[in-house]
Length: 100
Image 1 (cartoon, rainbow, N blue to C red):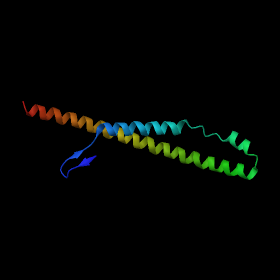
Image 2 (image 1 turned 180 degrees about the horizontal axis):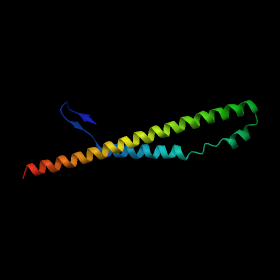
Image 3 (image 1 turned 30 degrees about the vertical axis):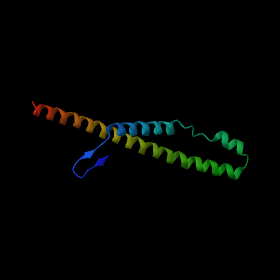
Image 4 (image 1 turned 180 degrees about the vertical axis):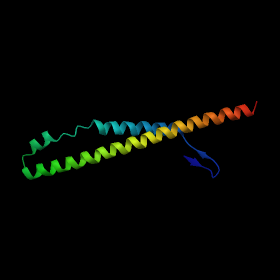
């Protein structure tokens, strides 16, 4: 987005790309196998196993919150992009009609 003090210019294609990348990143996080069972079984050290399980539990909560936040931001970006495209189209129609 750029501004010259009077006008705001928004690259709608860049907004659409950002939405797509955010959606992809959220999907990737959602698809992560959070199971640590095999890893813990391979550690062979009781205290370290506990720390790995603790980390995995905290990461799972954080990952879930991050996915929710990313999905919310993505939805907001998509709504902004669609609204701006619609507004741009309506303004163009109005201007074209006033020139007739």
